[in-house]
Each structure stands twice: as structure tokens, then as C-alpha cells.
Image 1 (cartoon, rainbow, N blue to C red):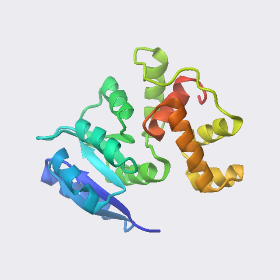
Image 2 (cartoon, rainbow, N blue to C red; image 1 turned 135 degrees about the vertical axis):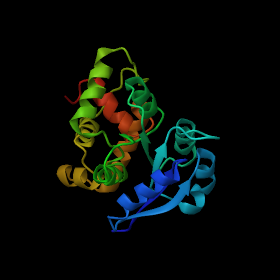
Image 3 (cartoon, rainbow, N blue to C red; image 1 turned 30 degrees about the vertical axis):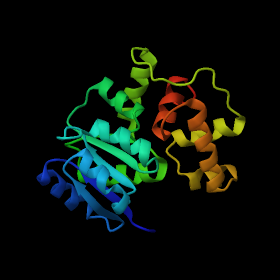
Length: 216
């Protein structure tokens, strides 16, 4: 497989160095860009062409929240993994709505960080195991946070099938194998679902499916 290219945006060099050590334990992962702030990150993205960005939130000049919005707008295929010290519920939902593909705390061990890089690269989202899914479900169902989805969305049987399999963290290739479609057709259905629901990425689709009770 070709290497997964990674950019790290964090104003603490010591943290970036630690991340690089953890990432380098896997020969399929390669750090291609480092940045002190969001602006520096955005300026280098065309040249470095990463697949995944590990994004700190609290940075000078341009913070990670603003940078995530800009990445989503100008580089929609790049996945963003937010790494932060904040574990506030509303904050997490807000970031996922604004296009983050995953959310990790700064004390996450390097094994989980590597796992999350693969997950966002292959599936488009990473929710830390069941804890995070349960957290999202509790928040969204409680109704005190209302993610902005399109109302009264109607799906074909095939779209519903693909949505459920996406929620099971299956890749396009795995979904295709299971329902006898090419990975490209699965990607087409995923794109259609994102447009129908009115979300920014696959993570938003999963949030929608949880809120609507499509998956438990």
C-alpha cells in the first residue's frame, strides 16, 4: 500500500516530536509537514499533499477550529484528526459538525493515534470506540444539542444499507464486497448520502444515523 501522508499542526515542537516518534513506528505512515499554527499549515498543504492532518486546537495566529473549517472548504478530501486537551461535550459536537473526522485527547497513546489515522483515512471518521459513540448518542438523543441535519430525508433501500455499514466502520472496499458493488459505486452512494443529509463528512453521517435511531 502507498504510505499515508500526515501533517501535524501544533505550536509545541516537543509534542510534534513525540508524535513523530509514535507515528514512525509504523512504516506505512509518513509525516510530510509540520506547522506551528493554522495559517502555516494551510500555506503548505498544496505542496505537502497530506491525507490526514493531526490538528491542535489552541494555536497562535490561526487556531485549529478555524483551520479545520478552511481545510474542509478548500481541501475536502483531507481528513482532520483534532487532538486537544478539551473534552467538553458541546465542543466535541461543534467540531464534528464543522468537519473534523475524529477527536482525540492529548494524552492518547501512540497506538491509538496510529489506529485513528488509519480509521479516518479508510472510513472517513474515528469515534474512540464505544465510549465516544455512547457519548454522541447520549448527547444527540437528549436533544440538548441539535446538529443541523436536513429534515425528512428519504433513502433508498441501498442507501440505507450503505449507511448502516458505514456506521459499522467498514471501508468502501469491505462494503462493496458485502453488497456486491464496486468501491467506486459505494463512494458514490456515500457522497449522495452526505448531500442528502446535509453534513460535511462521514462523521456527520454517523451522527445523523445515531440521532435518527437508524443504528443503535
